[in-house]
Length: 86
Image 1: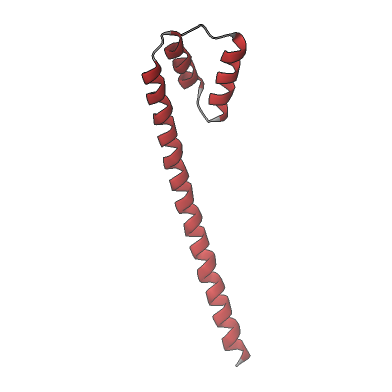
Image 2: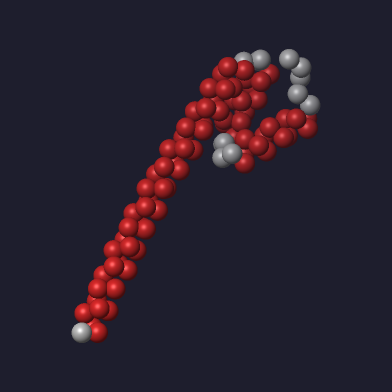
């Protein structure tokens, strides 16, 4: 393994930052890179990926709750309009 250039480090930092990684995680990742500890880098990325996926699932549940409420409200409105026409 060779030493990273400043440009490579910049690109790694930007990529990890864009992926939602905080400064401590980025610094740890780069330290692992310097020490040629690839397996630990994979583990670190996998852990962050799992946390992002969990957050995604939580947000999807919240969206589902809102969608259900809109569905119920629209259904009630349709039923109310039908009864008013009679």
